[in-house]
Amino acid sequence: MFRSSLPLGASALDGRSPLAALLSLAALFGLCVGIAAIFAYDTATLPLVVFGAAVMATGFGIAYSYPHPVLGACNAVTLARVAMVAFLAGAVGVADAHPWVVFSVAAIAFALDGVDGWLARRSGLVSGFGARFDMETDAGLGAILSLWLLVSGTAGPEILILGFMRYAFVAASYVTPSLRAPLPESLRRKAICVVQIATLIILACPLSPAPVAAPLGAVAALLLSASFVTDILWLARRAG
Image (cartoon, rainbow, N blue to C red; front, side):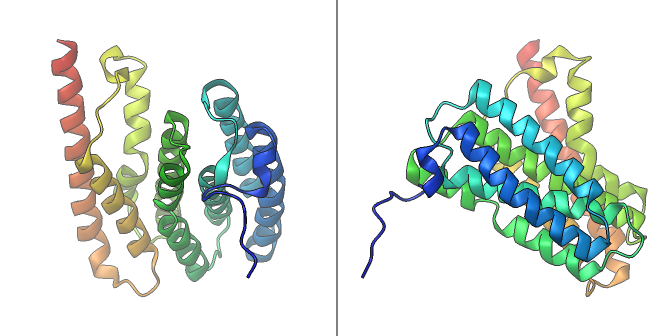
């Protein structure tokens, strides 16, 4: 039986520089996003704009802070998740996006979370860039889902707490320097992130009973808010 000589986490793109591999994958995934968006929404403009902006930001990150000589399958998986998030952005801009399409793509993107980290650890490609890449992808998924739940009438404006709390924290850090300090690894923070995205996906499921939307969203928002308050207080004590 044929066995690949590539180590776990490697790919055929690993013979190229990380930036070249990123651009090659981006071209492939961008084509997939465009075709899928045209079939789903009759337009691919917004998904391709979102994907292009994400690829540009990722390229800058690789150029200035990625320490490894190869991109690796771990970052390829994260880029695939970015493509799914970009595809979902198209659902926000149309009035008739099919709920099952949104739910299914979001569930797949969420299910792949953790695969990239596992691949990075197994292939020795762990990096601060990879962790940030994964985190920003999760944040983008949460933001897009919360916006879609709002515009589709599934949830009220309070759902934006689940999608934009982190962005509010980042914005606040520009006027409060103490919030820019690095936070230690936290199992609590990771668990709350899982609850946050899982809640949004459950609410996006067409089979979810309408009466559970408000209380479920409220509980998740309360947990997320408490997590951010905990981090803010920790940063304030450290700065003081």
